[in-house]
Each structure stands twice: as structure tokens, then as C-alpha cells.
Length: 396
Image (cartoon, rainbow, N blue to C red):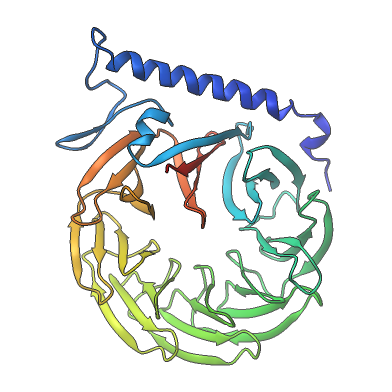
């Protein structure tokens, strides 16, 4: 294994944090000046028009503009990526934000509360691609551990130091991260094989043959069941302990996006332009929504409602029976709902959408933001194309 960049003694995080917060304050001051009487105001060349009546304004992550979305900046961290590097995955794992950088396979952990650097390690070989990290907490059989897999190997890390404490081989080459349930990591393999990898013994406890290649990550459906769908349109719910299917069926197109748990159902998007709501116990269809374009993104479940992003077709809100509440042409991916409304990520913008009618209420410029990850406490971790991480917290 090559030496990591840890050995180069990175600059103190407190200093980098202070610089970033100073820059943030300067951006905030600039916005105040443009809204003060006697100063120039109005649409600027860098602003993004969201709709005919709404323009996104404010500097990137501007605290004043973000307040209109019910959010505030808690911290900003700069990974200082090399020009050839990019963030390939990010997961919030209890008290850590764990980030995967590719193609060099650096894994960095940041304290989720303070935004301070925890550790950085180089995992795997040059030709390996790392997928999403997972974590077993203190209540697991063998204690707290972080897991991350490549297409063929399964790595175990100490969450306190990032030290590599184990490497195991996987049963078959995989194309995505796994789903950790108890003592097993469930994977879908490239050649249509699903299997449960025993994280302690290092071998597959059971194997299950699907029809096509599995590209969507497995999804935990209940305490001891996992849902998988493949590119042939076959889906199955498997008992993790035994490997036996609870139900299996097919839709009319590939399943390439993650399913979502919605009350008593599993919401399964398909390229056949349909969103299927399947009863989690029986697999029977509770309802089906037919869209106008292929569904390649996961839906978001919020209370009784479902928010569905479509490829080129905007954002759609459904009720718990699959009826359309509203449709909008906004090209936006829903993140979460807070006391102000539905927060979504658009093109170079963060949006606040009215959950009652789909109108865009507010928009804040967020150039370079590539993805957003919601935490259970209502906070959001944004990641940018140049390697910055921004934690946004809900306001009171």
C-alpha cells in the first residue's frame, strides 16, 4: 500500500476553517451592500433564473439568503483535492462524515458536529473503485467498525483512526456499495448474483440468482429484509437471515435507481416510466404511477407525500395513494422537508419549494454543488465539484 497524504502534515484544520469563515463573512457583507439603500441591486450576471418570476441571488452559501430557506451554515471544510481527484461518494455515519475520493482512493473522515478533520487513509489499489462506506455501531457483535468495498474486496477500518484492520475477498465482482444489516453486508453482483457477505467470517452466507445485472444499491426494507432490483426489471425481497425470497416479480424496464421505503410500501422507480408502490409484506402493488419519462432517480418520502424527480420532466408530488398533487417543470432533486417547505437541489441553486402547490418560493445560488446528503436531524451536507463540504443546519 502506498503512503497516504497524511504523511505530508496537512495544514491545521482550525486555520483553514478560519480562512473559509472569513471568506464567508466577506460574501455576506457583499450581499448586505447590494441590498442597502444607495447601492446597486437587482439581477446580476452570475444569477440563475429559476422561473419567469424568480431569480436565485446571493453569493455561494450566503447566510442571509440561506435563512430564507430555513437553513444556516454550520461549517465549511475544504478537502483540497488534486486536479485529477473528485468526490465519488459521501456518507454520514453517526459522528463522522466519510468521503471517498477517486480515482486515487483516499478516504477522509470529518467530525459531523464540528467539521474538523478526523483522519485520512489510502485504501486499495490504483485500479480499484471504492463504493459507499458503511458502519456497524457499538451495539454490533464485534464493536464499532467502518466498512468500504471495491468491486472485489471488503475493507474494515477503525472509525477512530481510520486504520485498516482487515481485508476480505467478495464472492463476486460488484458494481455498487452494499447494505449493512446485522452481521451481513448485502451486495448485488455484476452478473446477476445477490449475496450476503458475512463481515466477520469473510465469506458469503447465501447467494441468490437474479435475472440481470444489479446496478442499484440494495435497500433495507425492514429489520431483517433487503430489496434488490436489476437491469432486467426483476425485483425481490429477501430474508437476510436465511437468503429465502419473500416475494419476486418483474416490471417492464430496468431498475437502476434505489427504491425508497414509504410507510408500508416500497417505492420502486423503473426506466419503464413507472413508479411502483409494493406492499413490503406481500409484494402486491398498492398503486402505480405512470410518468412521461424514464425514472432514473430515487423518490423522496416525506410523511404521507412522495416527491419524484423525473428525467427531463421536472418534479412531481404524489399522495400516499399515488395521485398527483402537483407537477412542476423545475429540474430539481428533493433533499428534505423543513418548517419552511421542501428543500431541493437545482442547477447551481438551492431551492425552497411550496409543498402545497410546487411553486418555487426562494432560490439561493449554489454554483458547483454536485450533490446533497440529508441527515436524520434535518441537516444537509453539500459537496461541490472542487472538493468543498458544507454543512447546513435548520434554523429555529
